[in-house]
Picture 1 (cartoon, rainbow, N blue to C red):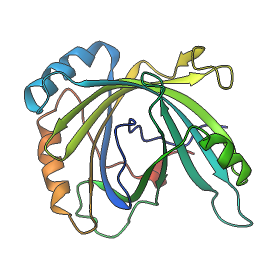
Picture 2 (picture 1 turned 90 degrees about the vertical axis):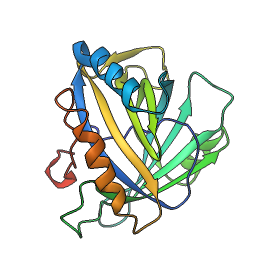
Picture 3 (picture 1 turned 180 degrees about the vertical axis):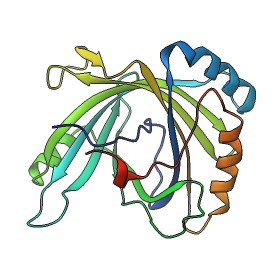
Length: 209
């Protein structure tokens, strides 16, 4: 099946029961260095953090409605680090004036037996992928520039194939509910990245699953 739209957030720490504010876009491979140069000038860390993560997406199908989705992620560059289990809620559809997508986000650290635990709970692994790239920070904002690769042999993260000729770019903030001024700060920052990348509030209802 075709993978549902993913959000690539590296394993860099957990936040519990927060709201995620998100803008997304993409940049072609040949424009990557120009974007990284711009981000070095705008962000707090001139040299970005790098990451290589393996993510598994699990589904639990109920008797009705959409399946319950959990994301298990581990760092390939730091294999002794804890796994992370992530739940992303449905995007809020209230205030149309918000400049960013807003959804509930629960992110917790877990032991290395997380996949076995999810299987025991009745979840089924739907798909997996490898994400690698760069992380920039500007105050509370995080910019993740990542390349996604499909795993050709289940469980073998050495045997992958790139999904596209572009990099996914995500600008996000995790904040308590009601901090809607965050989206205005994000919009202002996104404007400074044009025309290299156009970060947008993606409407999930218009994306193919």
